[in-house]
Image (cartoon, rainbow, N blue to C red; front, side):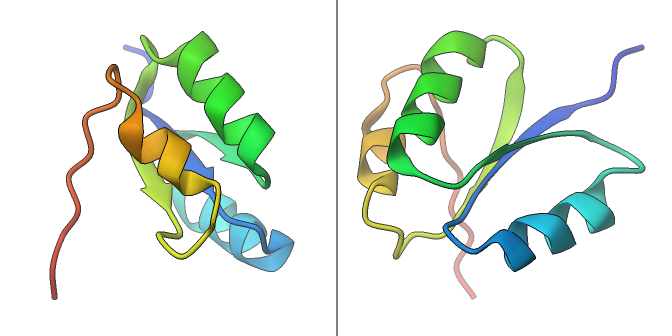
Length: 77
């Protein structure tokens, strides 16, 4: 069975590194650090991505949130 694929989107490389370290042993982690990358990955790999973790304050994440093929579940706490 293939691992679940998670896309992590953040403009700070230290956060991407931390998330990959935390998730990498159990999940296939894809990283995006800019708007062009996150939109391209969502469009090209949407059939593989099962979870997107993104910085909602990251300006270009709006395009990811609007993607029709990307269902987002945003927890509130």
